[in-house]
Image 1: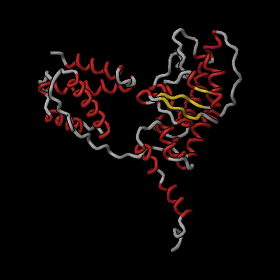
Image 2 (image 1 turned 90 degrees about the horizontal axis):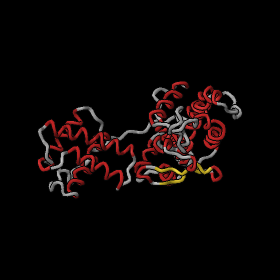
Image 3 (image 1 turned 45 degrees about the horizontal axis):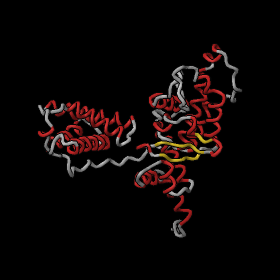
Image 4 (image 1 turned 30 degrees about the horizontal axis):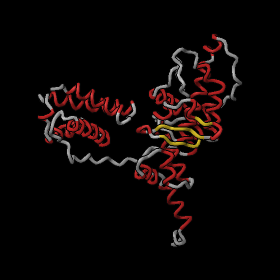
Length: 319
């Protein structure tokens, strides 16, 4: 009988290779299953045949008792269901305790969104100095100008997160060939490696070109340098954690506490809808599989909706 850890590794290899899941998703599955298997071990269960529906439901109750949100528990249950289905398909065991198991209802939470004035302050105020000319590089000069290169890299990151509505993983995964400057488009590989094209215009494209043509070379002075658009100070592909950190830092510069990269994506979607863009087009730009996900943004700005209603309805202002 294979141990749970061995089965888990086989399953993770399956979802990575056969299903084409991203490394980020793989890490989430690994985390979910590690906690699940630890729970089983604490209940002296070392064989899949002994896992019952009651055990799985007890684990779900345990997660809620630990204070996990509905969305986190929902993801964990999804991971567990996939794991059990894999064991049945691979004939590791016959019982499937998660068959017809309903996912816990996901709590409704409106995304955080910045106002257009806040966006202007975030994208403009920290970068008031005039754009510098491309430096002539020597090894010593390159080292001394790395902070300046990071400055313009960060500007491009913020502009593209908001200007293109990218997820952090999508931004970090960009290679130079993915930005089609002449077409003003970005080729994005989203969840499940699904490809889409997103417009990149205005200050987003300008900031990208300034960074790539004048400053990226300062960060690329390393044997480990890749074709990634956005590089760390070591010349490697920038990490998601680094992007989280810099977005929060620039947010604090302009008085926005706890700013998250996804807030810029939420703001992109909301401002597009407020500007009159069709919901289906916003769905395509965001790479949402379901229109219901995009519809979250239609609930956000009630003030905007009310003002539109007051202006449009012939009897709205009659008292």
